[in-house]
Length: 230
Length: 363
Image (cartoon, one colour):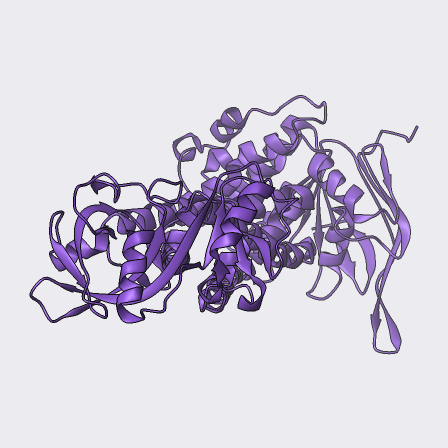
């Protein structure tokens, strides 16, 4: 058995890309552990490897070296079919541009994720309750094109929790929103992360929301460092 | 699948436009198949309709029933070699005048034994043997369009023999010419009028059943009906041409649906990326794509068929148009299968989508 104190562990992760003749080392020996209910932020300049870091944490990409442990699943050079299953059952994504499906209502967006996870034995989440919790009851029957940017992002947050995942990963969730709405969205992520006891990582540029998270790490030049005073 | 249907419903206009193209394509293809069959019937209907399974024709005719020539004795010989009914048939193309009218009407005589099984179904009037008139003829219903009615007298243009129209039959054509059934006696009279030395010969001996194994005639052979039909001059050539056009159109129209769908798939690659990122596997995605193509194709096929059959019911009798249900089913099923095959293109494209594209806010 793997130690379950942490729901997300990244151990000595390195990632290199072939760039012409040279190997381009994007992540250099990164380790990070996140406990249930803990919400951490990753900041860093563009090109510092934030997206690669998030893709590896989210089973979208296998690292060149090191391993990722999500819940009690150890991920190391898994074939893509298993990665798909891990994403479906153990990871909740919140993307930069909400990325809701245009042809589903808010409620159906959530139901889709619940339906995908019918057979995994975990207790079902309640889509209605979640929408209510995020102040979206009036939007349950509406399509994304009838919602504002903030509302769409809130639906996307609700969707990320619908598979009852171990880990919530947010990719610049405030990028397309103004300051006030951006802050509301991060507050909601925080609220749900604590309520449902998920380990959460948010990649962000937005310095104004960093006071809402439990810890801030800076990714610079492929290295991850904890920021003590933010 | 629920997701497939919800998307079609949400982008109604887009998919209805595609659907309308599919419907028109199917309509065109089914309609063309009706014309193909119609033309086939215009050449072969009277042979197809004949209640005979096999025909004996002479070897020197190269399978062409019209060129065959058998002496009277062959009929006797054949009848002793099979347990089935046999009867003689003569086919002669000529023309008729209506009484007191100079206009010649194209006709092909089927000279038969009026008491035997080649007598056609009589849709109006009486059969050739059941009347008091001396020389009688039963005409294809298309002659009614020339204002000929039961009881009228028509004249063989070449021999000048007058015949009373005693009845009409439906859908009797041979080599694009409408058929008139006459008795062997009438046929002999017409031909001896033109050539006093004419002796009784037959084009073919028709066999009603399939007991043909013991039939061996010197200078003649037994052929089944399909071979006789295929060898009516022009039949095979026409059918090959039209069926070629037909199947090329089936393939092209099904491929067009596949290509349209591929273009739509390319527009939606990011959506497929999202679905993959939240853990939808290729099996679910393929079944979503396949069910959408299937819904579009099925709906198009059904509506296109309804249109084609509706149109068929409004066409005039003289138009060579004949929808054959088995052919329509084959075309419809082939269309659906080909669209499903072309949808593989979209599935392969989706399989190649890496869900990582949606991380980092790539627009």
